Length: 321
Image (cartoon, rainbow, N blue to C red):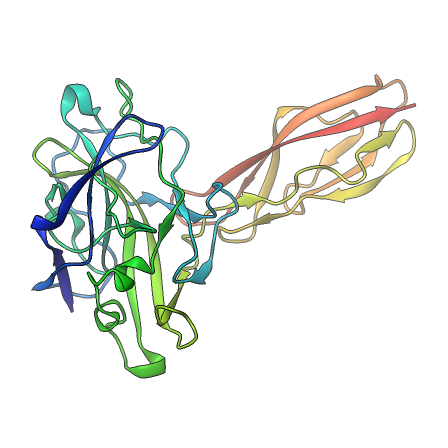
């Protein structure tokens, strides 16, 4: 299995929208050199001497351009963004500590800590926008090191259409209609020496598809799809005092089932409850309960091993006489 190097002479400078951070973009289109072999296996993230608060192999969610819902698959030209856990940050910021944010796309099994992140990864490819411009290095938020302003116009197609990656390199297993390739993709923080400090990862499988304009489609590995609450409002949205409430079912997508539900902010009217395993609001509002709106927040948690995925939704139920 081979990893590919981008042409270091193909760099251009562009400015990240909305963040004021300078991004070193490189067209992936000029040359791609076969550089090294790596063993296939789970992504190994060895210690690169980061600070003790480092996040290694966290969850990166491929999502629709608006940030929700998470995407499980798509065509080569489907736009997407990357959603990280709330408050995701590098161990240090750019201004004071020299940390920068990079994207990466490497064969499954790559030891990511061996990658030097300078201008762009020394091994492999990365995330590109619809013009084929590489994402990184990007400045963090001052002081906090937070990762901000992630673009919403990433696409996989420009990797091939821009000429930086051939379809055979992307789909490195099998031939013809059965060709495929499994890659690790995500965002990483590197310190001033270019060493990995933090990263958020997802697994992408590319499959040959003759009808696609670039000849392939993609899917996200089960268990690495972010979770999203589908329900935006209760139905029905009102509950009458002393009258059985017609059950309202909350639903979510992504992550790994089964889910667990919990009211984490606010409260339901007295007499109603949220089923922890069903996500169903049911019961009868008790006599004497104050009428009016009851805003509350629900949190859904999936069954992913290790660090579980969570999502929240703000809902309101109105009590009437």
